Amino acid sequence: MVQAFQLIRGGRDRELQQRELLVILKELEELELLPSPVVKELKEAYVFLRNLEHALQGMEDKQTQLLPEDDLSQARVALIMGFDDWPACVAELEKHRERVATHFADIIAIEDEEHEVAALDEGWQELWLGEMDEEAATAWLDEHGFEDAEGSYAALSDLRETRTLQTLQTQGRQRLNKFIPVLLEALTHVEGPSQTLVRVLQLVEAILRRTAYMVLLLENPGARTQLVRLCSESPWIASQLAETPLLLDELLNAESLYSPPAKTELQDDLRQQMLRIPYEDLEEQMETLRHFKKAHILRVAASEIRETLPLMKVSDYLTWIAEVVLDHVVDVAFANLVSRHGYPRRKDGSACDTDFAVVGYGKLGGIELGYTSDLDLVFIHDADPEQSTDGDKPIDNAVFYTRLGQRIVHILNTQTPSGQLYEVDMRLRPSGSSGLLVSTLPAFEKYQRSDAWTWEHQALARARGVAGCPETLEAFEKLRADILCQQRDRGKLREEVVGMREKMRTALGTPQIEGKVPEVFHIKHDYGGIIDIEFMVQYLMLAWCSEHPELTQWSDNIRQMEELGRAGVLPVEDTEKLRETFITLRSTIHRRALQNLNSQVAGDAFPEERDYIQSMWNRVMLG
Image (cartoon, rainbow, N blue to C red):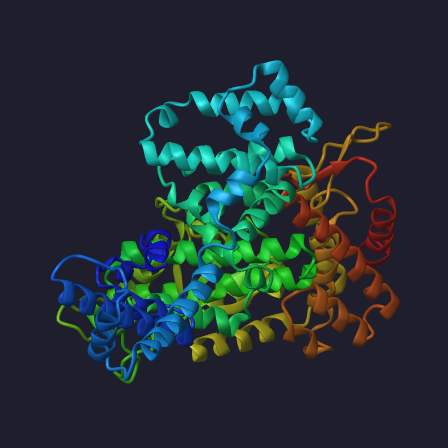
């Protein structure tokens, strides 16, 4: 049991790379991989069995683990072990054996591997080992529901011929030869077994030299079932598992797989994982963050596929994951710089408690993150730009915060063996790509009041503080509300918003040819799409916040629509219908992302929703 955990988790959790079994058991308890009562029983059993072994070997003066059969030897062993008689000793032994067997069955094997493989129809084994000719093999696959029997046979043949497989060690080849037939049988229980086979073979190729993962799937029918089911329903999940086989660990517990944790639990999980990694070990920090993100996003995707999470909750969870990651990245980057240069200082000379805010715009700000969304970020600090840091190698506060921003972007953007944490877009900062990476709060305020374009105030409607110093975040939120509540000329504002929308539609939407119905409809960018709703909401926010400051309390489209209805800016029946339409279109984008599909659908899709959005656009923006 201990070795299984070491093989599966030892690459990620380095404390499992030690040798002493009792030490590892303690680590498994601290990592919450085994419950404390189980660890206690396993420790007690191990100590008892070891002592019993020592008693037997001491008596016989040789290597033996056989219990004695004669009365005298049994009495002597009982005495050495501290029991009054042999039956009492055997009773204690049976208690430990029963406990160990139970935990072994729970953790390692539900059924004996050899028995399970033997119970398979021999045809699967013959098929995989090439003992059937092509005609018989394709007929077999066709008979068992493979919709593209010839393609499946070709995929298996290609795998057999790969150089990696040809050079496998004996044990690895034996494991593969047991695993593939079991996998093929499991595929007969999902829709589209041929298509699913192609997806799962990505993973098989990735783990050919790491056959401990095959053992995990052989010995855990539940995990194997989850694997083929999820790969059947989502090529995106299949590619995630192939890129990071360590995620297979998440399939072991179906209950947690389909119950992603709330934000506080996410924070606690990340804190526990990071306790053992020093801040200065940036490479290990980055790898662990990437695995943390992937593992939790897998759980969200699995929950969406099984419909245990509605769309709004999916976006909440994906957004929480990003926020928890960002908070930790800020802490790591800040600690790294402080260790070199000391703390930046405020005007009164006191040390800053980061005094730094990460502001999320777009999907992050609007709590609408998808599986592949990038992060639109703006960095703000509230330290005195005239001061410098208080360390042995002081630098100007402005330089400190610029480096802090650069380091945060580096941690998020860099490609490592585990991939990229998040793609970061900083173009919404003051003055865009030509502006400073990090602004002071007063400079940000001055820009928003004097130099920002209307579209930048539209973007501010979907902005919110997502990580960093609570005081700086609070100061940003107050400033955001003030800017949004400025009095505006509604007619001029409407013209500018409509003009910006037309530019976007021309640049990003489907080209319109007069008299011809487009073959595709872009759910986001085309007329009657999501962005029409977003622009309407943003216009109404900017036009009416001065009279209804309560509109500023939310940054997401759904609650902004609800608030516009409550304030009487739009009839409630319209805000409710807009909300439903918005959710319908966004749900489609989410589902398509899990199929590795873009946001373009058939040209005649969603006719009612598009007609309604267009009628609302004409009434609100062109009326």
